[in-house]
Amino acid sequence: MTKEGAVTGLFIGGKWIVPEGTGHYSTRNPSNGETVGTFVAGRREDVDAAISAAVKASRLWRETPAPKRGEILLNAAMNLTRRKEEVGRIVTREMGKVIAEGRGDVQESIDFIEYMAGEGRRLAGETVPSELARKFCLTVRQPKGVVACITPWNFPTAIPNWKIAAALICGNSVVFKPASTTSQCAVEVVKTYEEAGVPAGVLNLVTGSGGVVGNALVEDPRIRAVSFTGGVETGRDVYVRGARQLKMVHLELGGKNPQIVMDDADLKLALDGILFGAFGTSGQRCTATSRLLLHAKVYDEFLGMLEHRLESFKVGDPLDPSVDMGPVASEDQERKVLEYIEIGKKEAHRRVGGTKLTGGAFDKGYFIAPTVFETAHGTRISKEEIFGPLLSVVKVADYTEAVRVANDVDYGLSSSIYTRDVNRAFRAIDDLEAGITYVNAPTIGAEVHLPFGGVKNTGNGGREAGSAAIEEFTEVKSVFIDFSEHLQRAQIDPR
Image (cartoon, rainbow, N blue to C red):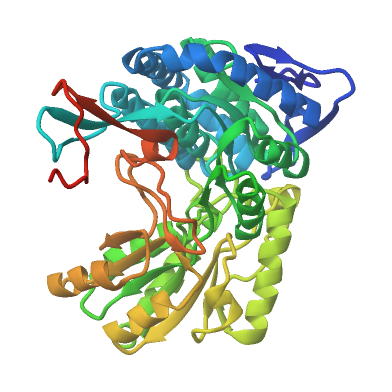
């Protein structure tokens, strides 16, 4: 941790530096307002220095055998394993998710780095037969060069590591721009790789605003790929800026994820799922369950069960292991969620919550009661991403209506159905317009060895995690080896 009052510098070319003339900003614990750390507000010239360092280091890292790169990543995973509790508490202090989820954020980082370390012995291409005799056809994967990783605050170690570990194992050098509200978590991520032996300049960190640091990264022609996770409007702007230079831009954006509960569902299991899916991380996951589509036959019973469970649902200090939900991450997040609650009060029926929590320790942070609205499909709260502890409940008559409502939004990230009917479950896998579908589980809980991403406004078609992660950070080269010892002409009539 940074000493009280000290400024944590940028990490450029293997050194932590505080450039002259830079401003500073601080991150704060959303549960009590305490300062977590103070950081450099990077400028365009700092981005230029970081990219220059990455360019300089790029050739050496590219030529390091991929299995050797994997060994360094495995060192990073081991380092983070030793520091799991420490870093998990930093996640909770800086972002506000409960301590079990703070540790989970770090464990997801560990799991993915380990997984990518193994990719160092794969990075597979393909071999195919040639149409000509004595000719060999294959593909190889090569790094893109210098890439930019721009990450959000809700998974402040996991998402950076999803991007950084994949980029590094593929042989790229990286400039990393984290969300300003979770800069200390970003520092811990970079220290993990620094201590693992990643060479100077291969991984660089520039903290600061998206308008300055983010735009400078996207617009620099030396950056050959941009991996961005965040909001739709910002993502669209990043995409357009990158497209002007024909660079690859990978976007992971929003979600409005439905959990369907059919009349034959295990209601107790579905209830556990909705509580975790809707209110885990205070609803601040792109995969959070923001819509509950309830079959009419179980509607009243299930809502009664949900209301009863929320009566004992504990909101408070996220470092307290007995707490179920902590604060939202910032004053801006609190304002946005409260605005949607007011919208909901005008267009729907508030069943539970709908208030900012005040009094005692609540006055020092950004605490909002878990909120449930009964609403018709088509209202703003049923279709727009809110990113907070607000659940919209919609009654549906049958499976067909449930799927129609589930699909009738601008997003397509995650989806869930609770049913005992195996045929219906497989139909849902086929019918739901989403990159992820869970059966008898909530919309959250992706595992690192499967691809992650969605359709429609959730992104632009790529996937992170799993073996698909290497596709984001590599170029595919086709190779033809002719050992016939005479000229052969493919697609030319031999007559």
